[in-house]
Image (cartoon, rainbow, N blue to C red; front, side, top):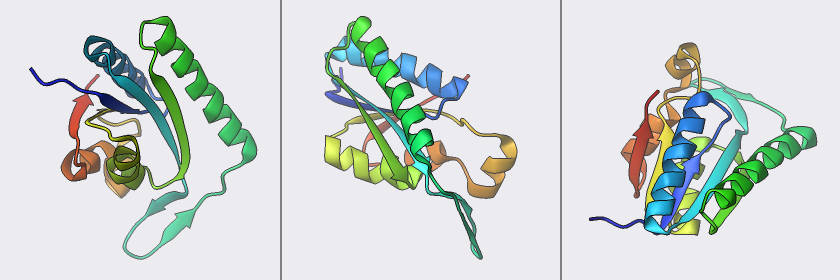
Length: 145
């Protein structure tokens, strides 16, 4: 049986991300693994072949997301996962979750909801989960509703 040591769960506040968090929490508990909860605030609304639409991240948005992540860390500790930490970054969710964080945190399993965004946005920019499942060097668990 494969044992995981460092589990990354990508969060975005969606119901599917909540399901992914629950799955990652149970896997971390069973494996006595570190749980890394991460949320990436996109630095662009979306990008296509012709244009990039930038967004501006505010201090209040970062504070709100950090509070959300802190609640997840506390919840994990209260439910038996004591080696847990939060990562908040502003950047490209695909790159951060597929490459940067897994390399920096020695991740061996990434857990994600299949899609936290609407169908129209997936059509425009594609699924973050789909990109990560193809490009990540880690095993990837995609959680469906």
